Length: 262
Image: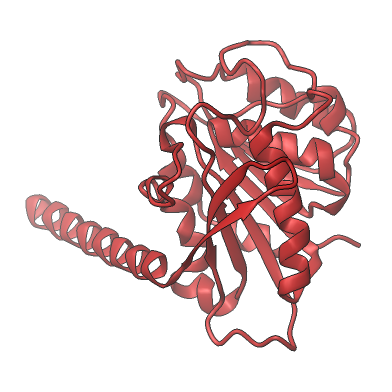
């Protein structure tokens, strides 16, 4: 009987995973592959995901997803490989929480934030945004002109290099961010605490050999000390690749879509 139950559970898990993967591939196939050229002359490929039955007379949240270093390029495809973040706009979430989502692709050799990912201590926000971040900041402004985006519901999330990028975005435009979710990233601990309106949920594996777990621990401690609204999920025994667990965390989507600037 135990073997039968285990097998049944395994089959159910595989079916659920397969269905989710098929849903993600459909979303990607129906997304728009675009390229934004910034005022700095740089180009930023990105994928645009629209809500079903998009109504230009309604306003929608905007989610920004920033990928990690391994997905850099200009093909507008590679950063869709680790696409677990799409759970936020798929299945029940797609019906309950219609939203726009953009997934820009950082070109090879570039970064969302020019800082040392392996450093154990907090960095200072560079005075000038990276080439790709500068493009992204402009792109958000342009999308707000093109679509009816709810300025009180801007959500930023990212993994690894994108986790650093998430925090860098907040440090530069934190007054516009309702919530952000850095996965195995790091922040300018002092500056990010200035934006108490932005709710945060950090994720990190305690055995991460690529980005020291101290980066998330120290950022969360600083945010708490400053009176900011922050959550932290540390995965015991896990290394760097925790994005699937992070985005599948029960309650994450509900928490995210509840956040709204006052």
